[in-house]
Image 1 (spheres, rainbow, N blue to C red):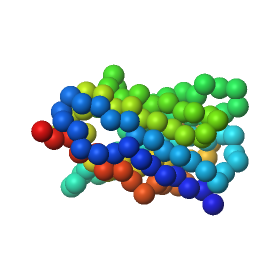
Image 2 (image 1 turned 60 degrees about the vertical axis):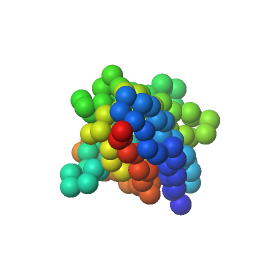
Image 3 (image 1 turned 90 degrees about the horizontal axis):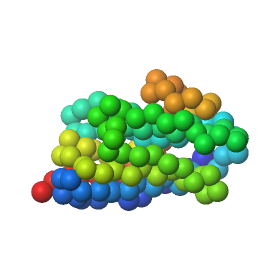
Image 4 (image 1 turned 120 degrees about the vertical axis):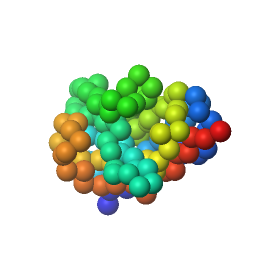
Length: 126
């Protein structure tokens, strides 16, 4: 059974940083995409970042325009853990962040995301 366990959310002041982690387990496929969506109160869910995985590849990445230059996604292949380093956080980054995984190594927001984590709250406020 596939499991995605997020950690690292919390409260941070504007301009601060947080790092989210997502430990993925329970699958053996080599070709997949893993990443993050978020949903703020009263807003639609949106893709934040994605990284692809395939044998021998460092992985291609995708970022929402709103986080480019501030967020960085990375993956530890040995642990099948994905990280989202979030810098220069803004109040509008406040949301529940969900780790997602989808089969097939393409990062597209509209692809089928087969599994979702339970979510991690990120609050940016002074």
